[in-house]
View 1 (spheres, helix red, strand yellow):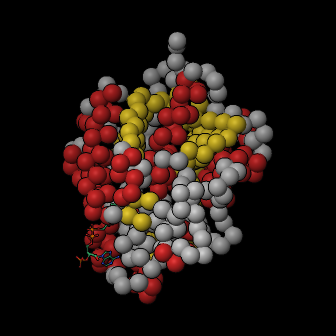
View 2: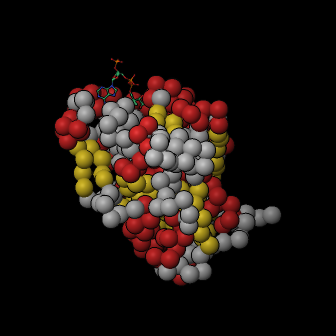
Length: 328
Ligand code: UT7
């Protein structure tokens, strides 16, 4: 079967207006700007307004991505929203976005692979387009992590923020577009990073609500070790699978979790700073949204040229990881 080349036709991002700075966190918990910046690289993050939920952020980012692609809602065949903080258990956030956009011919579903979700969703979209089932797929990474963050836990609340990034995928000319994917999971590490309660295993009750397990828990040290190892491994594997070498990479767009994890990957991939997209100082960790927000910003800033070799790498809860190499 002859596969159709698939690429990104448009990107967009949306972040809420409200900024939560390290100085403000100092007033809420026992922490300080120096610790947060030196240990994570984060200076501020965005927080959704009370009336905003994940589908609202996803909708705004989607509008921009469709505009850049020169497409309207009527052109979209499928919407995939990668999120771990959906508006509701169901209907899916993708269905809410479909309705709001008026993308009446689009199928819609959510995909949950935590911080790897956007790259997992890209791989799914790729399959539909490459095989000719659909032409235009809207892929969104969107999170309202502030709703599931425990602002009494200094180990986690300094890390997370809200936001959304979107990409419209479609057919591109031969030689351009997506070259490779590497994805993986290690379910045995699931308990290292999770929201334990509020699902069907341990529903939220009046008795357990004060255990605060409806919020994100993370074993930071263990996830850090996993992240450093997996980010380099997944990126190297995806680069080799694309028939490229490290020196061919023009732009590296990693999941924005911790500057020290990104620096370890830069060293391993022998990348200079000008080849790496970093914006976690302004947005913190927005899980499935970090990579599409960073990609949209790279495009906005003119850092992506036709023919550039781009590497996207995500990792996170599950545990999961995913890398993608594409030619712009
Ligand atoms: O997107 C999902 C993937 N997630 C990640 O990639 C996160 C990976 N992990 C990390 O980024 C890091 O482990 C953290 C940033 C979460 C933590 O950094 P760390 O260097 O591993 O710190 P630690 O947890 O080992 O804590 C060191 C010390 C502890 O004090 P003691 O026990 O040494 O006295 C903590 O209690 O720092 C203390 N600490 C803090 N101090 C000030 C922990 N959080 C804070 C804080 N402010 N917010």
